[in-house]
Every structure is written in C-alpha cells, then in structure tokens.
Length: 411
Ligand SMILES: [Zn+2]
Image (cartoon, rainbow, N blue to C red; front, top):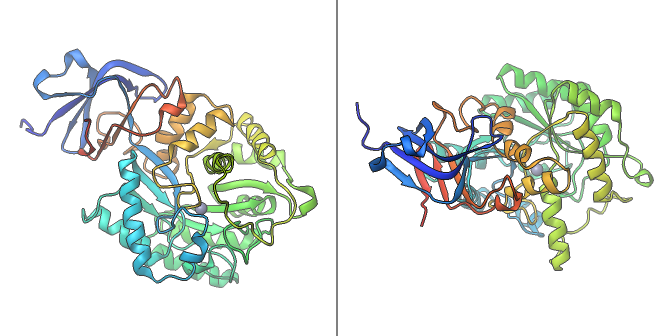
C-alpha cells in the first residue's frame, strides 16, 4: 500500500552503511518511522524528495553519558543536592528537548534520581514530551555520603549493594551505574579513593544479569578501574587512572589497559568535558569549586597521553560528554567528537562512528539505531559543511528527524 507520508531526504553527502565514507548526492527514504532505502538522489521519486542541500547527513547522534536533572553550571551541587523532585523533573524535561534539537536521538543517562529519570523516560516514550530515546541507570550505587549520594543510591555492604541493584533492575533500569571511585563533583568524596572491592561490584553485575542489563562504573581512580574490571563491569566511565597517592598523580597500568582492550570493555573517557572546561578557562569563565579532598595534580595532557596509549592497544571508546556537569550543556555532544580527533588523534570517521553506531552498539541498541540502513529507525541529523574533513563542522544540525518525525526543519 502506498504511504502518503513517504519521503526521501536528499543531501550532498550521506553517510554510508559502515559510517566510514560519504555517498555523494544520495537520498534516504523514510516511511512509517523506518529507513526504507538509501539510494542515488537521481533514483528517488522527485515529487517525494526533500532536498536538504549542501549538508552532511548522518544517523542521529547517540550520547552515552548524561545526568538530565543536572544544571550545567558551576554551582550545580548546591542546587541538586537539596532540591525536591519537582524542579529536577522540570529541568530534566527541558534538557531532553534541548538534546533532541541538537541532533541527539538516543541517549543514556548514567545517574539521576529514579523518580525523575524513569518518569521522564516514560513521558518521552509515550509522546508526552519530546526527547531522545532514553536509556536510564537511575540512581548510581555509591557508599554513604560518597559520590552523588543525594540521588538515593547509597549502599555499603555487599548485601545492601545487591539489594539496591536488584531494586533498580525491578524498576526497569536499562543499565546499572556504580561509583567505583569518588568524584570531583561531591565535596564529601575523594576521586583518588576506590569505593568498593571487586566482590561487591560483582554483586551489581550479577543483579544486572538477572535483568539482562550491563553495569557502567564511574572511576577516576586506578584502583577503581581494577575493581571494576575484576568485578565484571562492561563500561568504564572517565577511566582516569589517578593514583591513590596524591604525590604520584597518575598510576597507569598498561597490562590492565590491554585487558580492557582484549575483553572489549567500553571506555567513555569524557574528554569533551575536559575540552569544554579548558576552553571556558581560556575565556576566563568561573570554575567549579575544587574538591577539598583531591590533592596532588593530574595534568590533562598526561591523561591524554595515557588515552593515546589505550587507543594504540585497541581499547573501544564510546561517546558521553557527562552532560549536566559544568560547561557540558545538553546541546554540546559534538565536543566529545572534537576531542577524540584533536586530543586523542582519532580520525574524523572514527569519531563519527563513536558518535553513532559504535556507541549504539555499546549501549545495546545497535541493531535499531546508529546507521543509515534499511529497516533501522529513521533517526537522522544533517550538519552544514563536512565533519569528515573538519570535525568542528559537527556542531549545530540544520535538520533532525527522530523515528520519522521531523524535529528540526531545514529553513
Ligand atoms: Zn557522570
């Protein structure tokens, strides 16, 4: 049966199936929310074709790490550690709309109150508010008064941790998040400290398996990385190798990095956040308060050197700006791609795959989104210029479609 809604979106450059090259002057056919064809523009029916012009058409972006109720401001801690759920819900609803309009059609939230993030996920999926397809961890599991305790995930003993993880699974979490080390954001926490031994993290991994979901571990500490890997975690967040000894700065373990690569554990290095923070410093913007427990230095350039070694060992990276932290607003996802190219030395296409199909695969939706392939969801984002030539052209989209619905129209 003919579909009156069927359209073909024509662009000067369309990402190929592998997202590693352009198809020149092609069109993507869309019907009933799905991609039905990718073909030379000359072969698309003219009366059903929308010409987007001299743009680069990509799969909708996949953002791997957000905190939707968090205001991206330097004083965020004071706001979110004390507020009730209502303002958090309003802010989260605004954040997901901003993200969608910036070309993010799928995102994974890695830490928010359950009452907030699961409610927003439901509001998006039932069409009440616009937003990316949302996967949510709920409250991160953390020790009493340790990193992000205020979201409601405090648990100390292995039994309490198991019970907390199981409760998240039962509430429909898409992924579990554990704070394997302290974090900068929380002044009662120390980023150099490991939070849990591997056996306790294993309890979370096992609870996740009961619901068919994986675990993501926040860790700045090298010992937190070790505990997470030994505990069976599949996603390392930040993965910064800070030594427990402040005088030492970093304690990089190349053997453990090789194991991370060999076991295919995903790493979200949140380097876009570092890039935005250093640009903010250059502008003279206000900085967040320094965590009073964090001693010693950990120069960004040294961290990037470690990351380049991990790259050479074959570690797989995901996107994830840590949206909601200072400077990481919900429309800044491309900064992560910029940093992968400029600071880690990946190619533009590698960065574009991280922003689309690679992270889609990592978070478990790679058979559905992240590529321009027949049968995939019609999630599209078009950018002026050529981000495969200059990654900074991946910035503000001129056209966004999610599941066949136009979100941003070409002017
Ligand atoms: Zn985070």
